[in-house]
Length: 395
Ligand code: SF4
Image (cartoon, rainbow, N blue to C red):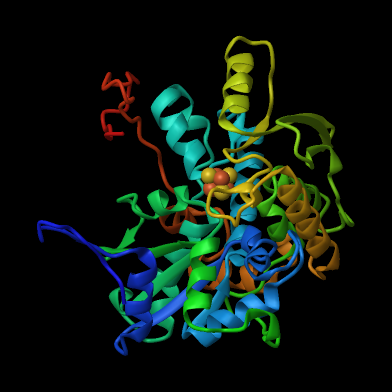
């Protein structure tokens, strides 16, 4: 077990990997792990596979061999996010709420908005990201069902992202004083653990995620690509408004690597204007167009990384355009192969919403699955002035 030790002896810093090993080896802890969509099409690159080559089954088998007690899928809460966010969008359209609705599952974008566009914070979806919805479910509901206290269950995330480590430390994401998500590993950190344990990844027999938190639809798989959250919401609202008879909805205009994508959607006699951006420079351009009145949208998806989460900072290198395109192709291939197309097809999710919250989009889901945002000081130290919001956070 290695720890970086301060030469003065005053400080000992353990990496997240070491702390996850400690948790796995602690017999008093139940350690559950969730895996983000973009990890499954990239982790194979660390073991000689091509970008986008499916390695889901081997990855699950490796996690079980490493000693995690339950191997769950962030796809589960990606479907839950889509349902909550889709209903939030429909609610704002009906009641004249703040538009555009900006997505909120990218913590780098959320922090950017808190620092530089505090006047837009009421436009952000109040939905927690799939990672944080998952942590909240595990600590507040799943732990109780398996007879544990929140502190006895350790929740680990495997993410393509380094910003997710920051998100997990936001003080609002705790249950009874313990973090909802205890540790966040990047794709490359998980690969390091697999190598440290001497597991021959390519020779593993594929295994399935555990249930009840291990099932996701194709709409959740594509969360890993730029445009995926928007397409999932389009699938949900189209099917929801047609009474479940929307057929298969594939929404191609929001797919691809382009920095800014625009699309329109006919919904109940109304034309919705949609935009999808990846990269914060592109987000800034779009925001300036919105603020100056040169553009109007009903909904905007923002992801900080090129191509979306599949191009996140925790993914294997090279993390270039060719690799990102390969991973993107892999994700849409998984979506095509998935039997469940829409989030509301996921019986495990709809039942969990009923059992734990009495259904979707109500005060109970708002308590555990939604959040709020806080203006932050800019790096210059000058406070951001927003009337009505007194709470403010440091950078
Ligand atoms: Fe993380 Fe990048 Fe995905 Fe944002 S787009 S959640 S920063 S990997």
